[in-house]
Image (cartoon, rainbow, N blue to C red; front, side, top):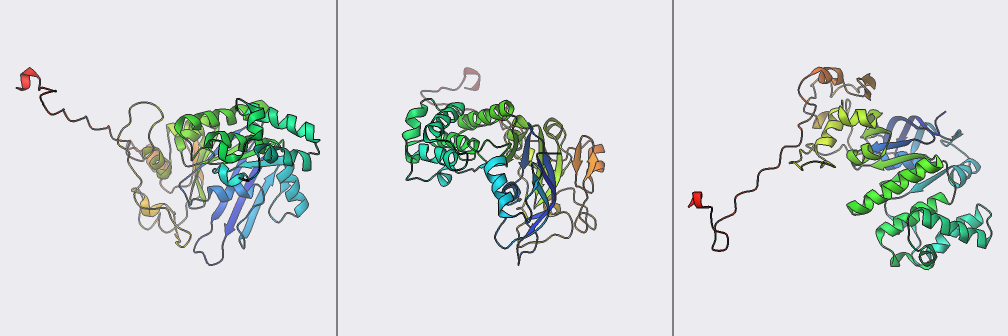
Length: 351
């Protein structure tokens, strides 16, 4: 049984033209890192919060969400408390919004250890120091006495990770934990998460809009668009040969992690909003392969194509075509030659 399991999860708000989540099914095993990738508004954060039983107020919820065997859709308060205090923890993308600015970091870390885990004051402090050291902060006793405003964004994100680990969870939910950080700090945070995940055997669900980051750090990837999973598979397979035009479009519009930086190819148009509905594939209006009368009229069902599972009417046809599903990033133009000047004379052959 997966540690985290979604089965046909459906979340809708009254008055909206389409649901936030429409039949989402995915799983995370113990000791596995899984990424959920998509543009803003695709439903990624709602999916992650559902693993804590946190649904939008007034939402109609259907389907199943299980964490370590505990069903969360329609769960009572005792079941929700069990999951939130002992089975799953969440790291949010803005650490300054998740830590009380007028309390010390030590208070933030020791409160749950004392009130929920039943540790004494001395035991809670000792455990907090261990956690701060585990997430790479160089001087745990000093950081324990600091206020949030005295720490950088990267340091605070490490504190948030330490706070999530105070519950000794089996599942770690990471909602874009590196969004506001510079590239070097992003790499350090992801390395910490992966190390902890391997050392402790955590299941990890990473929410991100960066497909390259997901492929570099996770075992499997689910790609989400307008509340639906459009492609899923092993990270290496999905990155090497994306079968859904949206997945290929995300890759074509992202700068590569290695090699020369070419001119990016953006996906045209804008994602489908909640006030907009689509009788067929939600990506049809932005897809250059959409076939009128097919893609815009019926919702594609997921099916295995090559090494991934794809929800696209034309996936098999496109897989057999020599034309790529989306244009690759164009090579960057060569720099223009410098103009001759007194300090930078033209070469002799150009004179």
